[in-house]
Image 1 (cartoon, rainbow, N blue to C red):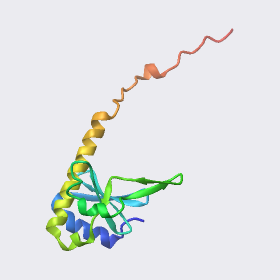
Image 2 (image 1 turned 90 degrees about the vertical axis):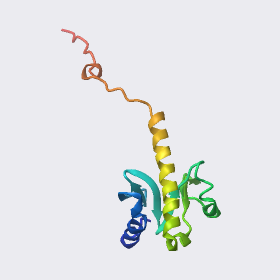
Image 3 (image 1 turned 30 degrees about the vertical axis):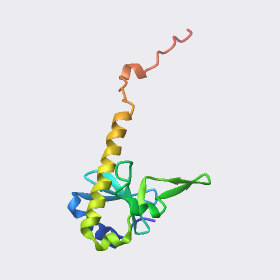
Image 4 (image 1 turned 180 degrees about the vertical axis):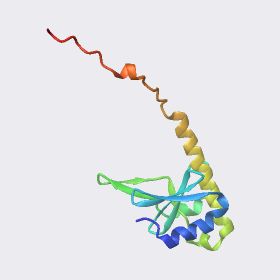
Length: 137
């Protein structure tokens, strides 16, 4: 379930110090982006921040909760997004610290994906055309 409008507004206010925030519905959830990089997801008005090996220590408290996940072919797939403890919404400075760590992780993931993505060579129109066989006459 996606973030409600009031919760989305609340998040924009709380996370505003990070930069330009946008939200987009995706896969039945809401992606939270800062300057075009998705660093959080929201489902049922619960926030999950991006986690990687470098920021897991920052999010040790969140490890007590299951990560964001989905079902596929009868299996549960865990994502690298950990639930933000609700107490952080009463601690705006600490929330921003966590959000910055999540944004840094999201940027590392984005950079890694750019480096490992296969380069696409554009095909010229000529190479796409097939040679036609001569017609029997």
